[in-house]
Image 1 (tube, rainbow, N blue to C red):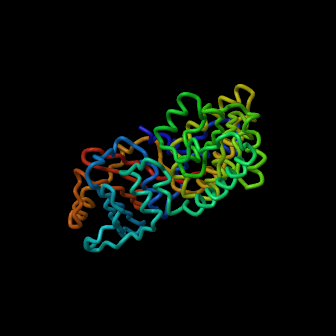
Image 2: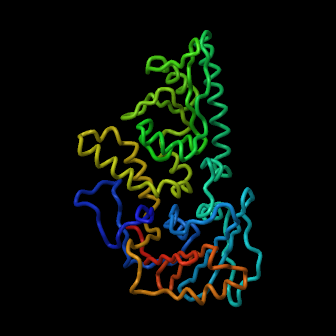
Image 3: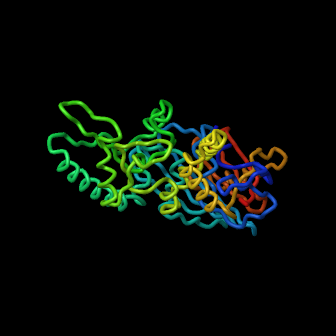
Length: 352
């Protein structure tokens, strides 16, 4: 369903007018020499094709065949309410281990495990930044209470689930499919008088003055979607992805949403309202440069010999009917994902 969001057609440009935020195009004439866990998992996240029963433990296998034919593999077991575990089975004859960092394990686990809050997935990466934000936020709230001694100042919203963010987006309470709330880096503040939640820009303007002092971004300064009771740790999504490049994994699937919004605002003569979105797309493009990409159409004309790999993996306990297999074959310049009867194969290239 969402595969089309992850890559563009091979050797294709998207517009005669060029902006730094526009898609750069995937060039299938460029040879890919290496593949990482990110490259294997990104095209298939999130995707209903590989959907699994979330109530049962599942394993994700990653296999990379280099251009000399050497095969490396890794298996990751994802149990319910358990930390993922790397497979400890002996390697098939002639194969070597594919070493995975903690972040790379997160990429693979994401194919079968969607936490309630994205912060839960990225806590090893974001915990320090969240802790710093919470200290600044609580200091700001203490200052705000001194400004409004007769009112109640409270937190309305901190962590936010993907489902809640999607509802906010549908009803127009947000214009972004991803929010810093989901990463534990934003809070909505409420000022209450006589049991009534106050609203209005002027009521919350003092937050803006305090946020500058505490080094926090205030939603009242947003352009195009003013959110005066909102504060966040980082200036915008572009700043977050720039500081944490690993989070590109979460933003790439929504690239088309961002592109539609930018193009719509430009057509309305309101490009100033989407400058943050343009900056995010520009950062994503910078991270894409010369990295592996996939051709949109599946390769019916170039079959991949998957069965021998699956047969070899069975010695590790691999079960084709339930386990997910991601295979990058640099000898054929293809990536394949399979689980049960579902199978997708794409040609490799590099982003321009």
